[in-house]
Length: 629
Ligand code: GLC
Image (cartoon, rainbow, N blue to C red; front, side):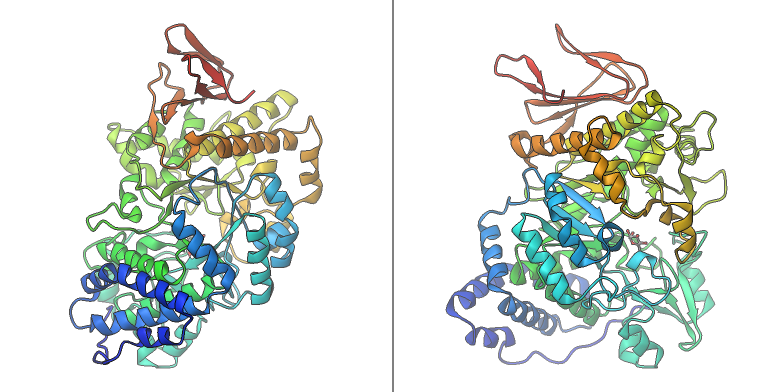
C-alpha cells in the first residue's frame, strides 16, 4: 500500500535563494518575505505528514523552489493583482455571486464563454466556475473529472492561449475564473498511469496499489461506495500490473498516492503553473479522499488538512491572490477543518461547499417543514475571517442525501425515513409529487443515495399544467435561491437555473456517452429560452430579474460582508425558517403552500405568501423595511 519514498540529502545552497539572485529587486524582496512568513507552517505540516523516512528539508526545498520559480514567471498583471489582494485580504468577501457551467454546454468552447461575459455581468456574477476544461480521458471521462493532463486545455474547448484570453477578459470585467483541480485521481491514460502500466516503479508509486484480494477486502471493509450502481467497489484490477489500483470513483480514475511526497510536489507545482494562466480560484475536487488509512473510511484524515495547509502556504508564496475552494461533500460537522478550524488550526481553504444546507433546503421543500434545515444551520459554525461558505441550490452533481444523516439522527429515532421520502418525492414516486427528477445510484426503493434533475424540474415547473401551478413552481425555485443568496458567502448559480431551464432533452441524453444519470441535469444552453428573460411576464424574466435584485442587494448592504454572522431566528411555525444576518438584516422563508404570518416583535407581523420569503432591514427607529417587493 502507499509507500513513502526516500529523498536525496539536503543540498548546501538553497536553490530558491539562488533563483532570487536573478530576479528584479522588488520581486526578490517580496518573495523572500513571503517565504519567511510561510516557511514555519510549510515545514511543520510536511513533517507531520511525511515525518519518518523522508527528508522533509529536501522536500521543502523542492517545493519552495517550484513556488519561487513560478512566482518569478508570473505576469506583471497577476503579480500586481497578488499585491493588491495581499493588501486587501477581504477582496472576495463582499457581494460575491458565483455561476457554474460546462464551457461547451454554456457557450461551445472557451472563446464562446468570452462572448457571454456581458450576460454574466448583467446577472451580477463575480466568480465563474467552469467545470473541468483540461485534457480529459479518451472515452468516458466523468464529465472531464478524469484528467489526462493537468495543464493542456481539452482540444475540443480551446488552447492555453484561449484560456489566457478568457481569464484576462473575465478579469477585465471583474469576474474571477475558478478551475477544477482534481487532486484525488488522474485518468487511466494520464502520463503517470501510462508509465506505471509500462512497469516504471517510480510511477507505480504514484498510485495506491493493492497486491492481493485479501488486501482489497481489508480496505473495502470500511469504505463507502460513491457510485454503487455504475462503479461498485473501490479497486480495479489491472492485468498489466498484476495488482489492483485504488479507484474511489470510476475504474478509469486512479487515486493518487499522497503518501509519496513526489505526488504532492508534482500536483502542487502543476496547480501553481495553472494559476499563472490567470486562474483565480481552484475548486479542489474530492479533497476528502486524499489520505488512505487502514481501519478508517479513508475520508477527512488529518493528513488531508496538513497537505491542504502546506498547499495554501505554497500558494501564498507563488500566487497569493488565488483562492482555494474545498469540494468536500461531507456532513456539516466534518467541514470546519477545511477552513483550518480542526485539530491543527491554520489557514486552509477560503471556501467550502455547504452541501448539507443545499440538501436540507430540498428536504424542507418536499416536507414543507424546516426542522432538518434548522438542525443544519444550528451546527454550522461561523468560519474564520477571510473564508466563507459556498451555498447553492443545484450543481452538476446529484443532490446527495447522506450528508444529512447526522442531523436526521440527531432529531430522534425513525427519522431516516425522511431522507428516503424526500428522495422518492423528487424522483416523482410519491403520489401528488410535482417533481420530475430521478434517483441516482440506487434502484432500491429502501435506499436514499442521490437525486438528479434540474431545479426547474424538481420544483414542478416542467409538470405544471396551468399558469397558477407554474407560478407556484417558480416561487419554490426563487425561495431556494433567496435562501442561498441570504446565507452564502458565495452563492453559486448553476447554468440554466437563472432561466428555469429544464432537464436535458431525451434526444441529447441518448446521444451522450455513458450511463451516468447526472446527465439529466446537464442541459445545453438554449438561446431562445434565454432571450425570454428580456420579456416581461415570462417566467424567465421573473426568475432572472429577481436574482439580479438579490445580487444587487448583496453588493449594496454591509450585512452581506462575509464576516457577518448568520444565526437562526426562532419562528412559531414549523414551515418557516427565520435567519438573522448581523444585527439589522432578517430573512424569513416560508416553505409551505399556505400563506402565513409571523410575528417578529410586538406589533410587527410579517405576512408571507405561499413559498414566499422576505429580507427585512431594521431601520434606526426599529421599524422594518422590506428589501424585496
Ligand atoms: C466531484 C465532482 C464529481 C465527480 C467526482 C470525481 O465530486 O463534482 O462530478 O464525479 O468528483 O471526480
